[in-house]
Amino acid sequence: MDAQSVETQRDFIVFAKQYAISAPAEKSLPYTGYMVSLEYYLRSLWTISLFNSHKHLTWSLFAQLLQGTFMTLPASINPSWDRHKRPNLSEKRADFEHLHAMIVYQIADLHYLNEIRSTGDVQLIRDVNGYIEDSWRNTSMLSFINTAVGYFDNYRKPDFPCSWHTMAIFLQVGQRYE
Image 1 (spheres, rainbow, N blue to C red):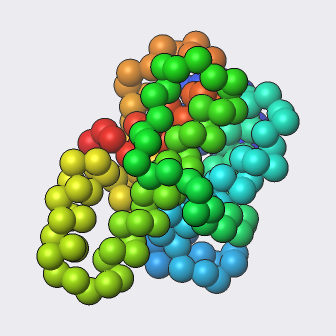
Image 2 (image 1 turned 135 degrees about the horizontal axis):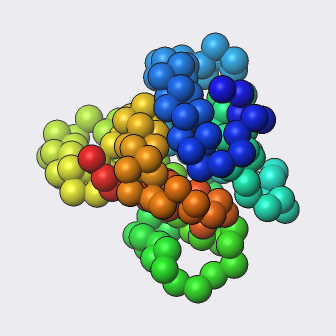
Image 3 (image 1 turned 135 degrees about the vertical axis):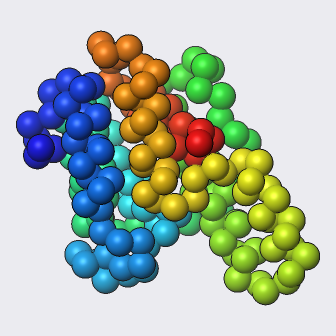
């Protein structure tokens, strides 16, 4: 199924399942040639989401954003992004602000974890690995997307509306559920 032909939540689930299977390998992106990781994937998703933030998010646009992520350069890390403040998606916010809060939290957290891993400090890495087991159930792009899609397929009502808040829930589920 093509991303532009997605109209309903069911269409989105079918598309996303196919997308997760056919997504580029985690070691390289044939479109841009840089190494991919969940952090890079989310940074690219943030870039393309910002570009489209003035639009109402539909299931079709959501599918197009996922698909376009692999052809989008990742956003730079912003030192002001707070990895210590996990967003509460039930707080009252403007629709796009839900996505903003969730994705920058996840990017900052993954960036920090990747920096710790690169130090080679065995004790710090053990601490980080324990943290990951508690906070990140899915640190690979493929498991992240598959888990989020599975949740939407199994637990969301078929007529669940699409919004930027919905996308934030998708990201939260990808991180936290097994």
